[in-house]
Every structure is written in structure tokens, then in C-alpha cells.
Length: 343
Image 1 (tube, rainbow, N blue to C red):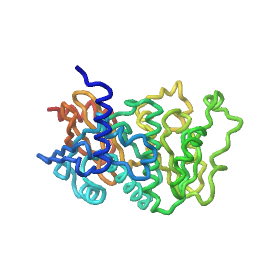
Image 2: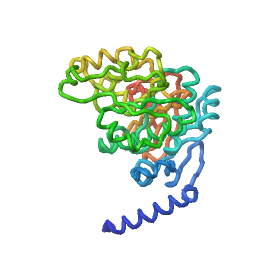
Image 3: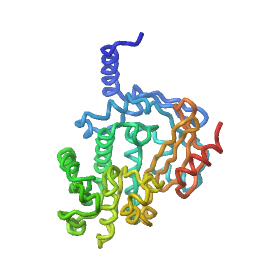
Image 4: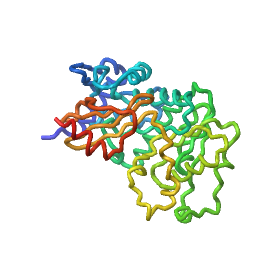
């Protein structure tokens, strides 16, 4: 007989209190043959300023996708460049969302120092083994906003003014108060959705060049993945910015465009805008999961290589099986590389 909802609720509340008061004590780690298994406390990675949201801390602790494992330094593959990246930003597969935020922000800082203009940060928000769409749409947007905020807080040390573009005007208004304690940012938006805008017509549109201020130093684009017009606006921003400021896209689901999810016949404006544009982007932190019996993950943490991991049959651990310097397509990973290392 299944336990009653009341009993489940009491148990969850008790676990939450234990993990909140003593996350270190709740973490159990076992290292064996280059594979690491991490207990429940290892995924309680939300900073103090995020607790006011009251949304994702418990969600990620109890989400089934977060009881996860990852390899440490002992994982095969690499080289001198990979070792240097590990020394700087941590080795192997990320073990928590604290790992994700820390590595993404550190890699972004390094890329800015290296003069990179187009930077992509992409990771699933509903669990480290999840894929986009596993969660409800509004919930995924809320989590993406929270993690975007965490990244911005981590970038405060750069002391640069960052203009943050949310997908649309309503989302910008909704998030303005929540982002109020983040220093050196300006809230903006990409689109003002309407029936006319879907046709490429907007009589009230303000050109991107007229919204940029001279002292803006970085543009951060927050999860422009709902409407194709959002990435069209990003292209316009890039083209109209005469100062060539860095553009950081967080959880834009650019793989949907890369993989041909939007047919050119039905999305001619997007096809035209993205032609030759996405090739400019370098990945600061990138994580894409592949589900199924032959599942695994494609992961990159700049300046390291693109690493491919296989997941065991139970989905409880991952092991690196391959790496390369250039970004493979998702089709190559799922149909060629992962099957090559099947058990």
C-alpha cells in the first residue's frame, strides 16, 4: 500500500530541514574506478541570495534526476589543455547546480578576458540528467531566470555594466523586482509579441541601436527560446551594435536552430537571421543529455574539450568515453559516438 500524502509531506519537510541545516553531513561520496557517486546533499547548491525565491532548492533536492553521479579527475581522455581547464574550473561532469553556476561564471570571465564576443551557456534546469521540456514551460522559465540571476551575481566582480535582455516586455517587468539586488545591471527585453510582430511588422518597434547606452559593456540574453523572434532580435542587436560588445546567451536552446527544428519554409526570417550567425558562438558551459538505454551527455567547460559521457542502465552514474576539440552535432553524438561505446 502506498504511503499517504501526509506521511510523504512530513518526510520531505524533515529531509529539507536536515539538508538545509547541514548539507555537508548529508553528502555521501564514494569513489571507485574513476566514477563518483554523490548522495542527496550534493545537489543542494543554491546561494543565500537565491533562497528568497523559495522555488527550486527543494525541487532540485527531491527531483529524481538529481540523484546523480559524475567522474572525477580519474576519468579517461584529455590532454594538457584539458588538465589546465580542470585545474581552473573543476574536473569532470558537474555534480550540482553550484558546480554549474561556478563553472559557467568562471569560464565566462575567462572568455571575456580572451576577447570572445559570442558566448553560449546552456544546461537543463530541471535536473542534471534532464532535457529541455521535461518540466512545465513556465516552471522552466522561472528556473532559468533564477540561474541567470546566480550567474549575474557571480559576474558582479567584473565591475561591468550588463544590459540584461529578457525574452519579452512582460517577462522583463516580471523579473525586474527579483533582479533588484544584482549590481551593475539594466533590465531590457527583446520583443513585444503581437500578431504583427510574427509577420515581421511592428509599428511600435524601437530599434536595438536606439536602446543601447554608451556605457553598456556586456549584453546578456536570458533564455530566448520561446519565440523565434527572440533570436532574430539578438541578431539585430549584434548587427546594430557598433561597439561589438560581448553577447552572452543563457539557455537559448540554440540546438533547436542548429538541428533544423524550425523549417526554413515556415520560418524564413529566422533562417535568414541565423545563417552564419550561430557559428560565431563559443560555449562557456554546455550540457546536453541524451535519454534512452544508450543515453549519455555532451559536456563542455571552456577552455576544455567537448566531452562525451555514457550513462549506466539505471541512470545513476556517468563515465567519460570520448572527447574532441570541436563541437559535434547532436546527431553525431547520438547515432555514431555513443553507440560506439555501448556496453
